[in-house]
Image (cartoon, rainbow, N blue to C red; front, side, top):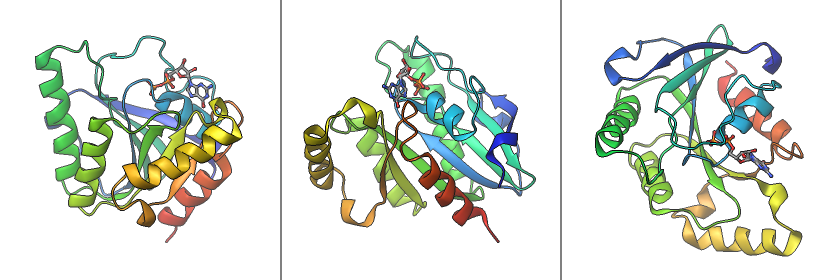
Length: 195
Ligand code: GDP
């Protein structure tokens, strides 16, 4: 798969707008500011295909990127931004809940967690949702460049207890600054989308 040819396809703010498709989908989930846009840009070798925001909590939309004829990358709205109004949170819940329950052709979810911190309650809720719905997922540990080797070891052993079923989950350290994890992630995506 050529990751350099991805194009932005569409953006949806309401569950009812989501198109039914036959294409394979890889969804990316995580709290706002976790490094989701940076990961998408790094993965697709672009400077600013996905907007890297300095202001978290921008309007929640689901963004579709076309990776190939039959594969889409689906950027889910970041969660956990405290200042978001109640109505906006509800719209977010409907959008994400609807997406996961729609029976889409979801071949992989990348659940992003900031490698420096313990997973938040919302991160754990999201993992629970993925497990309950039997959706295939891996945990991508973002901003790995911000930890030294001692901190890195501490977080990896911490996560083994903090995340349920950790021993069964692939956890991939990733940095959009150093490029750690990029090739591995591309390989994983190729594996799940090859026929
Ligand atoms: P999003 O809200 O999840 O899309 O997060 P962004 O990609 O906009 O990143 C949020 C902030 O974290 C920005 O200031 C980024 O420059 C920074 N950031 C994202 N990924 C990394 C990373 O791998 N390493 C470092 N050091 N900073 C990062």
